Amino acid sequence: MGVVNLKGTSSGIILELDPKLPFDVLITEIANKFRESRSFLGKASMGIIVRGRTIIDEEENEILGAINENSDINVTCVLREDPETDKIFASYIKEEVPEVVEPAVTQEVQQETSFDEEKLIEDKNSAIIHAGNLRSGQSITYDKSVIIMGDVKPGASVNSKGSIFVLGALRGSAYAGTDGNENAFVMALEFNPLQVRIANSIAISPDSETGPKLKVRRFRKTATVKNTEVAYILNGHIVKDIYGAAFLRDNRFI
Image 1 (cartoon, one colour):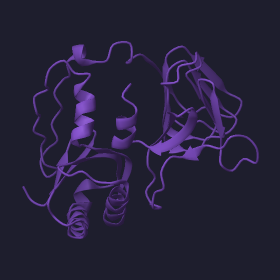
Image 2: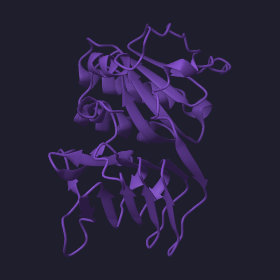
Image 3: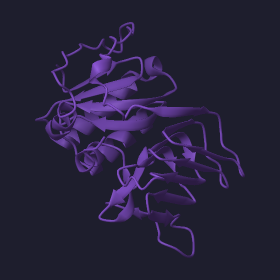
C-alpha cells in the first residue's frame, strides 16, 4: 500500500492513510493524490471514510482543505475509522462482518454486497422519509424518526418522537424526542436552525438575541468545507458537534 490510497464505493470514497508518516508530509501526499485524480473523480457530493490512521479534528480540517483545493468534490460528511469506534459498532453486531475488498477508483465501481437484516438494531431503524423541501409555514409531526430529503426553510418545523436527519439545510425549527427521549438527536448536512429542541431542552440560533444559545462543543479551526453537524443533549444541555468518531464515542445509543 502507498502512503495515500483512494478506493471508491457506490456511495463515496475510502481514504487510506499511512499511520507512521509525519502529518505535514501526509497532507502533501493527499493533495497530490486528489490533484492527480481530479478529472476522474469529477464534480460530485460524497462522503469520505478515513482509514488506517487515527486523526484529530484539526487534522481532519486540513485534509478537507486539501481535498477542496485539489478536486471538485463536495464532501458531505467524514467518518473516521479507529479502534474505539469499531468497539462501538461491535457492541451492536452479534458476529464479525467479513472484510469487503473495495475496488480502486481507477477501476469500474461494483455493487456493494447485500447486508444481513438480522444485524440491524431492533426498533432503531424505523423512520419516515419526507421527499422535498419544507417551506415557511409548513410543519410535519411523526412518531418515528424523520429523514428530510431536502431543506427545512426558515419558518418551517419538523417534530419527531425519534431523531431528525436533514439531507440538506436546516434553517427552520427541529424538535426531536417529543415524548421526552433525551437520546434523540438532530443531524443536518448544513446546520443553521432557528431553534432546536430535544426532549425538555431547548436552544436557539447563536444569532438570536434572547434565549439559551446553541453551543458548539469544541473549538475547531475554521474550514472552507462544510461539515455534517449534529445536536444532542450533553450534561443536560443541547450542544452542537461535527458528526464523526467523537460523537459516536459519546453517544453509544446509536
